Length: 273
Image (cartoon, rainbow, N blue to C red; front, side):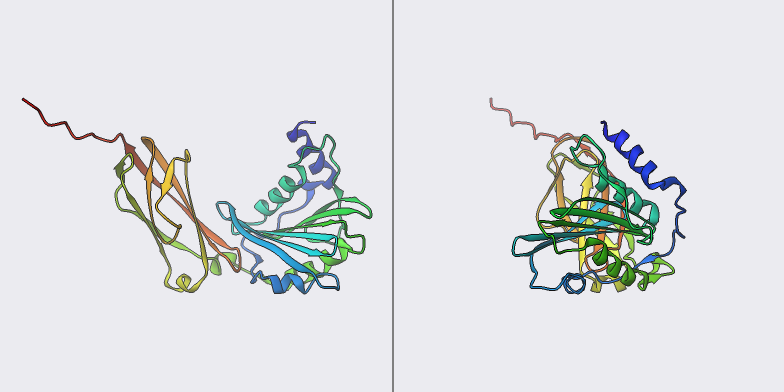
């Protein structure tokens, strides 16, 4: 089964096209922490093995926690969109269809969970529950955890999400005022400075910076930050996409800027008579 067929089958099972989108401006805004997630886990001593924050697209970022208790594993991923509910639903579809299975194992999840949900379970060994609610998509995977009820865990977390909705997500998200380049045209391997101007109130946030090139040919001179140095390995026009994510709320801002990279000009060799 081709991936696009999986997508169409999932949408049909969930009747996704019939699920009305919520008001684009509204959304969840809260501090996503390990302590918050731990409060919803089943009883017992769950150890956190890893947690990762990643920007995944303009206006969207994820945070993933991996928990372990004995032989049981729980992986919880939160995707937060600053662009509205459609991106959250697209994330749900991607998570449920980006696999190598020949069949579509996901079916409709609990009707009362978020705006739309889907689940795949092989009791009692594993279960994967995904749901979208306003601008958020949450994924909970349980493996070798027969005592874990993912629907109960999800229901408690969803209740908290519903209490954290704000009328305008853009008012609490970071905002890029301007992206400045030290030059709009540089030679191959010539140093370039990228300076991201944020609002004054955003500077107190713990920000994650990501800068991508339209053809992945940028070389950075160190860690990415509000001021970053870079160079390009090949000539040609470039579209740089700058993403700034608040590591706490996962709300983000993005901007694009154009750059022209020209071939390096070699100094002429001196004449030797």
